[in-house]
Length: 215
Image 1 (cartoon, rainbow, N blue to C red):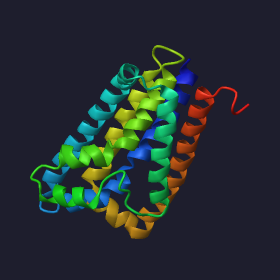
Image 2 (cartoon, one colour; image 1 turned 90 degrees about the horizontal axis):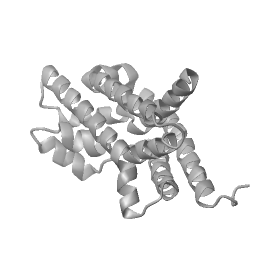
Image 3 (cartoon, rainbow, N blue to C red; image 1 turned 60 degrees about the horizontal axis):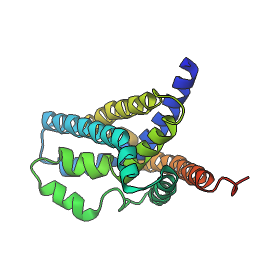
């Protein structure tokens, strides 16, 4: 049981962290908090990280219930979520800001706001459609096996939130240490991993929706 929990936790953490991608959020965070002091940026980073954890956890717990009420099946959502993640992954590989995460208009509006922690930082930049879809799919997959199956996913959300705070709170140092080239390399690697996750979601969804299709 312990080995299974560890495996599920590592799988969930890798998937959620890659799609939340706090390193990609660093340039946006710095642009939106350019007029804040170091202490103000740390406070914004903390509230954005907490908001991200709460949003993803809420969707993870309630997502399946909402889908059942709307008549949406998990396989259908896996396919739709996989397509969305693949679009984001392609933009990441091209080191191009993905409009599926945040648009230029939202960045400009965020820079003009007094408080950007929840909107647009926590949502949609960090806990955006791709992140929400990933958590819901992982929760749906985990809950099929054990009643406690969602715990590794929620734990992965919490760990991702903690790392996100660490990255954003030290955004200036992260950008200086990694540099533009380093950030691009990391973005491409994360994009490749996200593309593989997206394809796996679509394969799983198709296999569940059409049991005889992939045999």
